[in-house]
Length: 137
Image 1 (cartoon, rainbow, N blue to C red):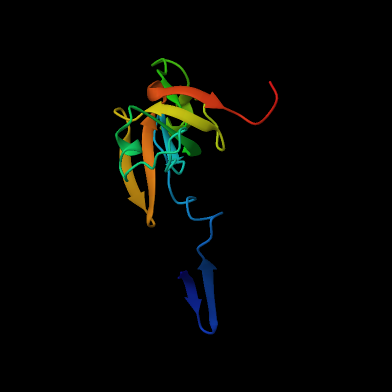
Image 2: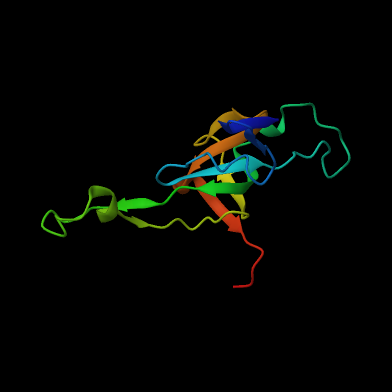
């Protein structure tokens, strides 16, 4: 899929939609996290095949963190830096989740969305039960 960005006399610039840039337009707000669910197992450990939709009804789901919001907003004292623009005075407590983490979360607290033909969950930080990160602690 190509998008036309600008058109001047003879110059047409197009951007190809790739895995790297398809989520760049999305801005996750506040303490929310965008998660792409992992592909569910089709079989149990004993070898039985599960019908479609069984894993989606589970209370706990797994997925990879794709984007995170800025975090929890800290209140700004009224007398502090009145001369600064409002957006520069906002401070945040950052979230624990980072892009690329494997997250285990409560599915009841999440909101399922479809974006560009793929399924994602928007999950508040409080619904994350555990994170798995590849880097050493």
